[in-house]
Length: 425
Ligand SMILES: *Cc1c(COP(=O)(O)O)cnc(C)c1O
Image (cartoon, rainbow, N blue to C red; front, side, top):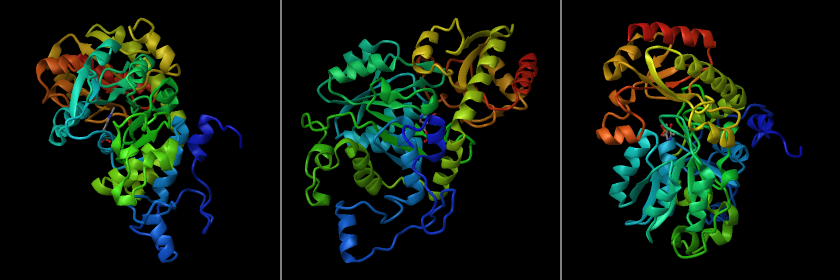
Protein backbone atom coordinates (compact mmCIF):
# COMPACT_ATOMS: atom_id res chain seq x y z
CA UNK A 1 0.00 0.00 0.00
CA UNK A 2 1.41 3.42 -0.89
CA UNK A 3 1.42 6.01 1.83
CA UNK A 4 -1.08 4.55 4.32
CA UNK A 5 -2.76 7.10 6.59
CA UNK A 6 -2.09 7.49 10.31
CA UNK A 7 -5.15 5.45 11.38
CA UNK A 8 -4.02 2.58 9.14
CA UNK A 9 -0.41 2.71 10.35
CA UNK A 10 -1.62 2.63 13.98
CA UNK A 11 -3.08 -0.81 13.29
CA UNK A 12 -0.74 -2.30 10.70
CA UNK A 13 2.72 -0.74 10.73
CA UNK A 14 5.43 -3.26 11.53
CA UNK A 15 3.08 -6.24 11.83
CA UNK A 16 2.34 -9.15 9.54
CA UNK A 17 0.75 -12.53 10.16
CA UNK A 18 3.19 -14.72 12.09
CA UNK A 19 5.14 -16.62 9.40
CA UNK A 20 5.13 -19.95 11.22
CA UNK A 21 1.60 -20.06 12.69
CA UNK A 22 -0.44 -17.51 10.72
CA UNK A 23 -1.38 -15.74 13.97
CA UNK A 24 -2.89 -12.39 12.97
CA UNK A 25 -2.29 -10.48 16.22
CA UNK A 26 1.39 -10.00 17.02
CA UNK A 27 2.38 -12.91 19.31
CA UNK A 28 4.01 -12.34 22.69
CA UNK A 29 7.43 -13.86 22.11
CA UNK A 30 7.92 -14.68 25.76
CA UNK A 31 11.44 -16.02 25.45
CA UNK A 32 14.74 -14.75 26.75
CA UNK A 33 16.90 -16.08 23.92
CA UNK A 34 16.95 -17.24 20.30
CA UNK A 35 18.69 -20.21 18.67
CA UNK A 36 21.50 -19.48 16.17
CA UNK A 37 21.54 -21.14 12.75
CA UNK A 38 25.19 -21.95 13.30
CA UNK A 39 28.49 -20.54 14.46
CA UNK A 40 28.85 -18.14 11.51
CA UNK A 41 25.34 -16.81 12.02
CA UNK A 42 26.07 -16.21 15.71
CA UNK A 43 29.32 -14.43 14.89
CA UNK A 44 27.69 -12.12 12.35
CA UNK A 45 24.89 -11.23 14.80
CA UNK A 46 27.36 -10.39 17.55
CA UNK A 47 29.53 -8.39 15.15
CA UNK A 48 26.55 -6.33 13.89
CA UNK A 49 27.14 -7.56 10.31
CA UNK A 50 23.62 -8.95 10.33
CA UNK A 51 20.48 -8.01 12.30
CA UNK A 52 18.77 -10.72 14.27
CA UNK A 53 17.51 -11.80 17.63
CA UNK A 54 20.08 -12.89 20.18
CA UNK A 55 18.74 -12.16 23.63
CA UNK A 56 15.61 -10.24 24.73
CA UNK A 57 17.59 -7.61 26.63
CA UNK A 58 18.80 -6.36 23.23
CA UNK A 59 15.97 -7.23 20.85
CA UNK A 60 12.78 -9.32 20.69
CA UNK A 61 10.23 -9.81 17.87
CA UNK A 62 7.25 -8.39 19.83
CA UNK A 63 9.34 -5.37 20.78
CA UNK A 64 10.44 -5.01 17.14
CA UNK A 65 6.84 -4.63 15.90
CA UNK A 66 6.24 -1.95 18.52
CA UNK A 67 9.40 -0.14 17.42
CA UNK A 68 8.49 -0.20 13.75
CA UNK A 69 4.99 0.99 14.52
CA UNK A 70 6.04 3.96 16.62
CA UNK A 71 8.75 4.92 14.10
CA UNK A 72 6.10 4.91 11.35
CA UNK A 73 3.65 6.99 13.40
CA UNK A 74 6.31 9.59 14.26
CA UNK A 75 7.84 9.62 10.77
CA UNK A 76 11.27 8.53 12.07
CA UNK A 77 13.84 6.18 10.56
CA UNK A 78 13.93 3.69 13.44
CA UNK A 79 12.96 3.32 17.08
CA UNK A 80 14.06 1.55 20.23
CA UNK A 81 11.55 0.43 22.84
CA UNK A 82 12.60 0.11 26.47
CA UNK A 83 11.26 -0.40 29.97
CA UNK A 84 9.84 3.08 30.68
CA UNK A 85 9.89 6.70 29.60
CA UNK A 86 12.66 7.38 32.09
CA UNK A 87 14.69 4.51 30.67
CA UNK A 88 14.29 6.07 27.20
CA UNK A 89 15.65 9.38 28.50
CA UNK A 90 18.55 7.62 30.23
CA UNK A 91 19.51 5.77 27.04
CA UNK A 92 19.28 8.91 24.89
CA UNK A 93 21.57 10.92 27.16
CA UNK A 94 23.94 8.01 27.64
CA UNK A 95 24.54 8.01 23.88
CA UNK A 96 25.18 11.78 23.79
CA UNK A 97 26.92 12.74 27.02
CA UNK A 98 30.35 12.23 28.55
CA UNK A 99 31.09 13.21 32.17
CA UNK A 100 31.17 16.99 32.50
CA UNK A 101 28.89 17.57 29.48
CA UNK A 102 25.80 19.77 29.63
CA UNK A 103 22.34 19.87 28.10
CA UNK A 104 19.66 22.54 28.14
CA UNK A 105 16.12 21.63 29.24
CA UNK A 106 12.87 23.52 29.61
CA UNK A 107 11.75 24.16 33.21
CA UNK A 108 8.26 22.96 32.27
CA UNK A 109 8.66 19.20 32.39
CA UNK A 110 7.16 16.14 33.97
CA UNK A 111 8.19 16.23 37.67
CA UNK A 112 10.02 12.91 37.35
CA UNK A 113 12.14 14.31 34.52
CA UNK A 114 13.06 17.33 36.63
CA UNK A 115 14.27 14.90 39.30
CA UNK A 116 16.08 12.63 36.83
CA UNK A 117 17.90 15.53 35.18
CA UNK A 118 18.57 17.55 38.31
CA UNK A 119 19.55 14.73 40.67
CA UNK A 120 20.12 11.24 39.20
CA UNK A 121 22.09 12.53 36.21
CA UNK A 122 24.47 14.31 38.57
CA UNK A 123 26.01 10.98 39.51
CA UNK A 124 27.09 10.61 35.86
CA UNK A 125 28.29 14.24 35.93
CA UNK A 126 25.77 15.13 33.21
CA UNK A 127 24.76 18.71 33.90
CA UNK A 128 21.36 20.20 33.11
CA UNK A 129 20.89 23.91 32.51
CA UNK A 130 17.30 25.11 32.76
CA UNK A 131 15.68 27.43 30.23
CA UNK A 132 12.42 29.39 30.08
CA UNK A 133 9.93 27.41 27.95
CA UNK A 134 8.47 30.61 26.48
CA UNK A 135 11.79 32.21 25.57
CA UNK A 136 13.87 30.47 22.87
CA UNK A 137 16.58 33.06 23.60
CA UNK A 138 17.01 31.60 27.08
CA UNK A 139 17.85 28.21 25.53
CA UNK A 140 20.43 29.91 23.37
CA UNK A 141 21.87 31.81 26.34
CA UNK A 142 22.36 28.54 28.26
CA UNK A 143 24.43 26.89 25.50
CA UNK A 144 28.18 26.51 26.13
CA UNK A 145 30.99 24.54 24.48
CA UNK A 146 29.99 21.56 26.59
CA UNK A 147 26.32 21.51 25.55
CA UNK A 148 25.32 18.30 23.76
CA UNK A 149 21.53 18.56 23.39
CA UNK A 150 18.33 20.51 24.02
CA UNK A 151 15.33 18.83 25.65
CA UNK A 152 11.68 19.94 25.72
CA UNK A 153 8.19 18.41 25.91
CA UNK A 154 5.81 19.04 22.98
CA UNK A 155 2.85 19.58 25.28
CA UNK A 156 4.45 20.32 28.62
CA UNK A 157 3.59 18.91 32.02
CA UNK A 158 1.77 19.60 34.19
CA UNK A 159 -0.02 22.58 32.67
CA UNK A 160 -0.65 21.29 29.15
CA UNK A 161 1.39 24.11 27.59
CA UNK A 162 2.06 23.71 23.86
CA UNK A 163 5.69 24.55 23.11
CA UNK A 164 7.00 26.48 20.11
CA UNK A 165 8.99 23.51 18.83
CA UNK A 166 10.17 25.15 15.58
CA UNK A 167 11.58 28.20 17.39
CA UNK A 168 13.64 26.00 19.71
CA UNK A 169 14.64 23.70 16.82
CA UNK A 170 16.01 26.76 15.08
CA UNK A 171 18.27 27.49 18.08
CA UNK A 172 19.38 23.85 18.14
CA UNK A 173 20.20 23.85 14.43
CA UNK A 174 22.17 27.06 14.65
CA UNK A 175 24.37 25.49 17.35
CA UNK A 176 24.50 22.04 15.65
CA UNK A 177 22.79 20.41 18.62
CA UNK A 178 20.15 17.68 18.48
CA UNK A 179 16.69 18.70 19.73
CA UNK A 180 15.05 15.95 21.81
CA UNK A 181 11.28 16.24 22.22
CA UNK A 182 9.32 14.26 24.78
CA UNK A 183 6.05 13.69 22.88
CA UNK A 184 4.27 11.74 25.62
CA UNK A 185 1.40 14.16 26.21
CA UNK A 186 0.66 14.87 22.56
CA UNK A 187 1.36 11.48 20.94
CA UNK A 188 2.03 11.47 17.19
CA UNK A 189 -1.73 11.67 16.61
CA UNK A 190 -1.70 15.29 17.76
CA UNK A 191 1.87 16.34 16.98
CA UNK A 192 4.85 14.96 15.05
CA UNK A 193 7.84 16.87 16.41
CA UNK A 194 10.20 15.58 13.70
CA UNK A 195 8.18 17.61 11.17
CA UNK A 196 8.88 20.75 13.19
CA UNK A 197 12.66 20.30 13.38
CA UNK A 198 13.19 17.86 16.27
CA UNK A 199 15.93 15.24 15.79
CA UNK A 200 14.97 12.69 18.42
CA UNK A 201 11.57 11.92 19.97
CA UNK A 202 11.09 10.10 23.26
CA UNK A 203 7.90 8.80 24.83
CA UNK A 204 6.61 7.34 27.97
CA UNK A 205 4.50 4.62 26.30
CA UNK A 206 3.03 4.13 29.76
CA UNK A 207 0.65 7.02 29.10
CA UNK A 208 -1.55 7.68 26.04
CA UNK A 209 0.28 5.37 23.64
CA UNK A 210 -0.52 2.26 25.69
CA UNK A 211 -3.49 4.23 26.90
CA UNK A 212 -5.08 1.88 29.41
CA UNK A 213 -2.96 2.46 32.50
CA UNK A 214 -1.74 -1.14 32.60
CA UNK A 215 1.83 -1.35 31.21
CA UNK A 216 5.09 0.54 31.56
CA UNK A 217 7.14 1.28 28.48
CA UNK A 218 9.26 3.87 26.74
CA UNK A 219 10.56 4.50 23.25
CA UNK A 220 13.23 6.50 21.44
CA UNK A 221 12.56 7.53 17.84
CA UNK A 222 15.49 8.43 15.61
CA UNK A 223 14.58 11.26 13.23
CA UNK A 224 17.53 10.39 11.01
CA UNK A 225 18.21 14.10 10.47
CA UNK A 226 21.22 14.82 12.64
CA UNK A 227 24.82 14.75 11.39
CA UNK A 228 26.67 12.95 14.19
CA UNK A 229 29.99 13.19 12.33
CA UNK A 230 30.06 16.96 11.72
CA UNK A 231 32.61 17.29 14.54
CA UNK A 232 33.99 15.22 17.40
CA UNK A 233 31.23 16.03 19.88
CA UNK A 234 29.45 12.66 19.66
CA UNK A 235 32.21 10.04 19.93
CA UNK A 236 29.76 7.18 20.64
CA UNK A 237 28.50 7.65 17.08
CA UNK A 238 31.47 9.04 15.22
CA UNK A 239 34.43 7.08 16.62
CA UNK A 240 35.34 3.39 16.23
CA UNK A 241 33.68 1.13 18.81
CA UNK A 242 36.17 -1.25 20.40
CA UNK A 243 33.40 -3.66 21.48
CA UNK A 244 32.29 -4.11 17.83
CA UNK A 245 35.60 -4.64 15.98
CA UNK A 246 36.15 -0.92 15.53
CA UNK A 247 33.06 -0.10 13.48
CA UNK A 248 31.87 3.51 13.42
CA UNK A 249 28.13 3.50 14.07
CA UNK A 250 27.25 6.63 12.09
CA UNK A 251 29.30 5.51 9.11
CA UNK A 252 27.84 2.00 9.17
CA UNK A 253 24.21 2.71 9.99
CA UNK A 254 23.68 6.19 8.51
CA UNK A 255 20.34 7.77 9.25
CA UNK A 256 19.35 5.24 11.93
CA UNK A 257 22.71 5.18 13.74
CA UNK A 258 21.29 6.90 16.80
CA UNK A 259 18.66 4.20 17.39
CA UNK A 260 21.38 1.56 16.89
CA UNK A 261 23.70 3.27 19.39
CA UNK A 262 20.93 3.36 22.00
CA UNK A 263 20.32 -0.36 21.43
CA UNK A 264 23.77 -1.90 21.01
CA UNK A 265 25.57 0.29 23.53
CA UNK A 266 22.90 1.72 25.88
CA UNK A 267 20.24 -0.97 26.15
CA UNK A 268 22.77 -3.79 25.90
CA UNK A 269 24.95 -2.46 28.71
CA UNK A 270 22.51 -0.64 30.99
CA UNK A 271 19.73 -3.18 30.56
CA UNK A 272 16.29 -1.48 30.83
CA UNK A 273 14.52 -3.78 28.33
CA UNK A 274 10.74 -3.79 27.88
CA UNK A 275 9.04 -7.12 28.58
CA UNK A 276 7.47 -8.80 25.54
CA UNK A 277 4.14 -8.82 27.39
CA UNK A 278 4.21 -5.06 27.94
CA UNK A 279 5.23 -4.51 24.31
CA UNK A 280 2.15 -6.54 23.30
CA UNK A 281 -0.17 -4.58 25.62
CA UNK A 282 1.12 -1.26 24.32
CA UNK A 283 0.87 -2.39 20.68
CA UNK A 284 -2.76 -3.31 21.29
CA UNK A 285 -3.35 0.10 22.84
CA UNK A 286 -1.78 1.91 19.89
CA UNK A 287 -4.30 0.32 17.51
CA UNK A 288 -7.00 2.59 18.98
CA UNK A 289 -4.77 5.63 19.59
CA UNK A 290 -6.48 7.90 17.02
CA UNK A 291 -9.97 7.14 18.37
CA UNK A 292 -8.94 7.50 21.98
CA UNK A 293 -6.94 10.70 21.52
CA UNK A 294 -9.77 12.42 19.71
CA UNK A 295 -12.22 11.50 22.46
CA UNK A 296 -9.69 12.55 25.16
CA UNK A 297 -9.35 15.96 23.47
CA UNK A 298 -13.07 16.48 22.89
CA UNK A 299 -13.89 15.58 26.49
CA UNK A 300 -11.07 17.76 27.85
CA UNK A 301 -12.25 20.78 25.89
CA UNK A 302 -15.82 20.36 27.17
CA UNK A 303 -14.57 20.01 30.76
CA UNK A 304 -12.24 23.03 30.45
CA UNK A 305 -15.10 25.19 29.15
CA UNK A 306 -17.32 24.04 32.00
CA UNK A 307 -14.68 24.80 34.66
CA UNK A 308 -14.03 28.23 33.14
CA UNK A 309 -17.59 29.19 34.07
CA UNK A 310 -17.48 27.74 37.60
CA UNK A 311 -17.47 30.14 40.56
CA UNK A 312 -14.98 28.12 42.67
CA UNK A 313 -12.42 28.09 39.86
CA UNK A 314 -10.04 31.03 39.53
CA UNK A 315 -8.39 30.08 36.25
CA UNK A 316 -8.19 27.30 33.67
CA UNK A 317 -5.09 26.70 31.59
CA UNK A 318 -5.98 24.66 28.52
CA UNK A 319 -4.56 25.53 25.13
CA UNK A 320 -7.77 24.29 23.49
CA UNK A 321 -9.70 27.29 24.91
CA UNK A 322 -9.97 30.11 22.38
CA UNK A 323 -8.83 32.75 24.91
CA UNK A 324 -5.87 30.74 26.22
CA UNK A 325 -2.45 32.38 25.67
CA UNK A 326 -1.26 29.11 24.11
CA UNK A 327 -4.18 28.76 21.69
CA UNK A 328 -2.27 29.98 18.66
CA UNK A 329 0.63 27.59 19.29
CA UNK A 330 -1.95 24.82 19.72
CA UNK A 331 -3.42 25.64 16.30
CA UNK A 332 0.08 25.36 14.79
CA UNK A 333 1.35 22.25 16.57
CA UNK A 334 -1.67 20.24 17.76
CA UNK A 335 -4.56 21.37 15.56
CA UNK A 336 -6.68 18.27 16.26
CA UNK A 337 -6.81 19.03 19.98
CA UNK A 338 -4.80 20.21 22.94
CA UNK A 339 -4.52 16.85 24.66
CA UNK A 340 -6.23 15.48 27.74
CA UNK A 341 -4.12 16.96 30.51
CA UNK A 342 -4.56 20.45 31.88
CA UNK A 343 -4.53 22.40 35.09
CA UNK A 344 -6.88 24.78 36.81
CA UNK A 345 -6.75 26.87 39.96
CA UNK A 346 -9.04 26.59 42.96
CA UNK A 347 -9.99 29.83 44.68
CA UNK A 348 -9.56 28.08 48.05
CA UNK A 349 -5.84 27.30 47.44
CA UNK A 350 -3.93 24.35 48.93
CA UNK A 351 -6.65 23.22 51.40
CA UNK A 352 -9.40 23.35 48.79
CA UNK A 353 -7.14 21.33 46.46
CA UNK A 354 -6.76 18.57 49.02
CA UNK A 355 -10.53 18.50 49.82
CA UNK A 356 -11.50 18.54 46.15
CA UNK A 357 -9.26 15.63 45.26
CA UNK A 358 -10.61 13.59 48.16
CA UNK A 359 -14.27 14.30 47.25
CA UNK A 360 -14.04 13.06 43.65
CA UNK A 361 -15.63 9.66 42.98
CA UNK A 362 -15.32 8.87 39.28
CA UNK A 363 -11.85 10.42 39.05
CA UNK A 364 -8.98 8.37 40.44
CA UNK A 365 -6.48 10.22 42.60
CA UNK A 366 -3.12 8.99 41.39
CA UNK A 367 0.19 9.91 39.80
CA UNK A 368 -0.45 9.07 36.19
CA UNK A 369 -1.89 10.52 33.00
CA UNK A 370 -3.16 9.04 29.77
CA UNK A 371 -5.47 6.34 31.05
CA UNK A 372 -8.94 5.58 29.61
CA UNK A 373 -10.11 6.65 33.08
CA UNK A 374 -10.26 10.25 34.30
CA UNK A 375 -7.45 11.00 36.72
CA UNK A 376 -6.70 13.82 39.12
CA UNK A 377 -3.75 14.98 41.14
CA UNK A 378 -2.86 17.95 43.30
CA UNK A 379 0.79 18.37 42.25
CA UNK A 380 1.84 20.58 45.18
CA UNK A 381 1.03 17.82 47.69
CA UNK A 382 2.24 14.88 45.54
CA UNK A 383 4.34 14.76 42.32
CA UNK A 384 6.02 18.13 42.86
CA UNK A 385 6.15 18.03 46.67
CA UNK A 386 9.91 17.49 46.80
CA UNK A 387 10.62 20.59 44.70
CA UNK A 388 11.40 23.95 46.29
CA UNK A 389 8.50 26.47 46.31
CA UNK A 390 9.76 28.61 43.45
CA UNK A 391 10.61 25.48 41.41
CA UNK A 392 7.01 24.33 42.00
CA UNK A 393 5.64 27.60 40.67
CA UNK A 394 7.99 27.71 37.67
CA UNK A 395 7.01 24.10 36.88
CA UNK A 396 3.33 25.14 36.99
CA UNK A 397 2.57 23.32 40.23
CA UNK A 398 1.66 26.08 42.70
CA UNK A 399 -0.47 25.36 45.84
CA UNK A 400 -3.88 26.01 44.20
CA UNK A 401 -3.16 23.99 41.06
CA UNK A 402 -5.15 20.84 40.27
CA UNK A 403 -4.15 18.68 37.31
CA UNK A 404 -6.70 16.62 35.42
CA UNK A 405 -6.12 13.87 32.86
CA UNK A 406 -9.51 13.58 31.21
CA UNK A 407 -10.55 10.05 30.29
CA UNK A 408 -12.82 8.72 27.59
CA UNK A 409 -15.90 8.14 29.78
CA UNK A 410 -19.15 9.93 28.91
CA UNK A 411 -18.39 13.61 29.37
CA UNK A 412 -21.59 14.33 31.32
CA UNK A 413 -20.51 11.84 34.01
CA UNK A 414 -17.07 13.48 34.20
CA UNK A 415 -18.58 16.95 34.62
CA UNK A 416 -21.12 15.77 37.21
CA UNK A 417 -18.32 14.30 39.34
CA UNK A 418 -16.29 17.52 39.15
CA UNK A 419 -19.34 19.57 40.14
CA UNK A 420 -20.15 17.51 43.23
CA UNK A 421 -16.51 17.65 44.39
CA UNK A 422 -16.24 21.40 43.75
CA UNK A 423 -19.35 21.88 45.92
CA UNK A 424 -17.43 20.21 48.81
CA UNK A 425 -14.09 21.97 48.24
C1 LIG B 1 5.39 9.64 32.70
C2 LIG B 1 6.23 10.54 31.93
C3 LIG B 1 7.60 10.29 31.77
C4 LIG B 1 8.29 9.12 32.43
O1 LIG B 1 7.80 7.92 31.90
P1 LIG B 1 7.75 6.55 32.74
O2 LIG B 1 7.17 5.60 31.73
O3 LIG B 1 6.87 6.78 33.92
O4 LIG B 1 9.15 6.25 33.11
C5 LIG B 1 8.35 11.16 31.01
N1 LIG B 1 7.78 12.23 30.43
C6 LIG B 1 6.47 12.50 30.54
C7 LIG B 1 5.90 13.70 29.86
C8 LIG B 1 5.65 11.68 31.30
O5 LIG B 1 4.36 11.96 31.43
